[in-house]
Image (cartoon, rainbow, N blue to C red; front, top):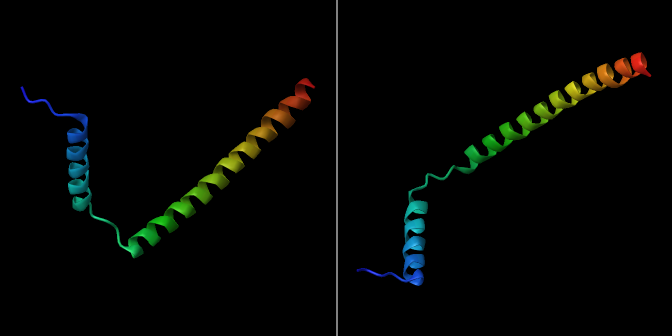
Length: 70
């Protein structure tokens, strides 16, 4: 029976993590900058679209139905 204590398991786990991190293909600074720019533009466009949909629904529901039943 092979009993491994928690400190031994912790050390083994950290060594495995270190080995896996070495295998990671890290992006270049240029790739990182391009990806960040795309994400920021996407978030801004998506925010504008959601804002326009919210504005349209508020016109329909609050102003339109509010006048009909108010």
